[in-house]
Length: 480
Image 1 (cartoon, rainbow, N blue to C red):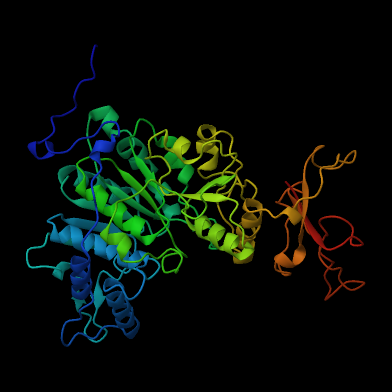
Image 2: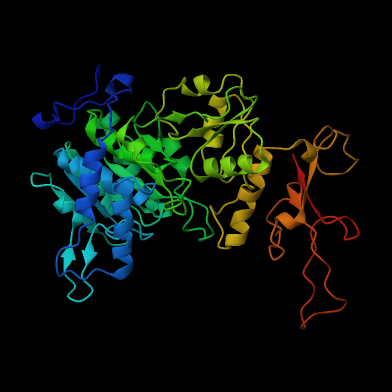
């Protein structure tokens, strides 16, 4: 056989769309004039006469009206509504289905308003203009394979539409892995069939347990090859706005996997001024913009970019440039080289057993990945323990001269190796109620807790101690 047989002939309505490898010529401007954004905000925040909306929902709509007029920074929920509204006015149908998607898992969308007295429903995005395109949004059962497979088929039959499927938490997408493996990631290569389906996967380690923490970014990066899918984690609301519009406006059709935030949905740090929506486009790599001649560049995405900025401002130092990475794979291969000439390392906010650092690392000239230890679960159920890696990461990413001790040979039989720098962090940086469990390797860190009173307390044996003897200073020893 000399050529791959075509499984089917694409219908005529696919003639205006292309696939294949990425080329910068497919990029388009996705900005929207301020006047149109304000008009969209006015229409989607209007409550019909006699409609009794919930009081909290009504207050949220009033805040969104202020966002649309530029009096308040725009958060992720409003950025998404503006992206949908602008596409509808331009004639692009929008279809979103998912688990609790009409309201939004984190109470951030409210695409459907419900009268608290009569139960009547109102769809604001269905009333943005007289000649707008069709807007559909559905709540699906807590099943993943069937709805995702249906939406994949819908995107195949309606290439002019923006079709999205959302998981209640990104972890749940593993139940639809067969659809992702066999169709989204390989459909174009096997059958020449294109799709522009968008997956919205809430992702973030925020103490909600092993089943509500990780969208498993590393799995999608393992599947990514030859520009078959796009994997993105927008860090600001404006980036999310441009990312959604770009997926619909440009003629290049590829599945898009978006790791959406949870705790940063309404945060001031991740919100954007309206000027970022009226100019520009989605940027795969955003430079720091503050440091002009850094001696070190950190590549990051998501909330860690905001935490690093806050830590640097707190320390008052600007020695490290920080490139906020928005796209994990859809950037050109030489994009990293342009962003970090000679940069010695990068940091991430993922567990050692997952995330982008292990997969992207070989292409970034041996980065220094920072995070907690690698473990089988993607997260734990204790918010206090979840805060520990993020608490230690900013000091490691932005070290102070006082934090580093002189290099000295390691004592015989001690953990570590000769020439390793040892840095002490006071225990007060951790909550006194947080216990360092045995699942964390001793060579990584050891914490000292105050000794209990002599004897047994309340009939229980004293908890085992981890770390050096109690007669040493109360420090958390981290081997760097």
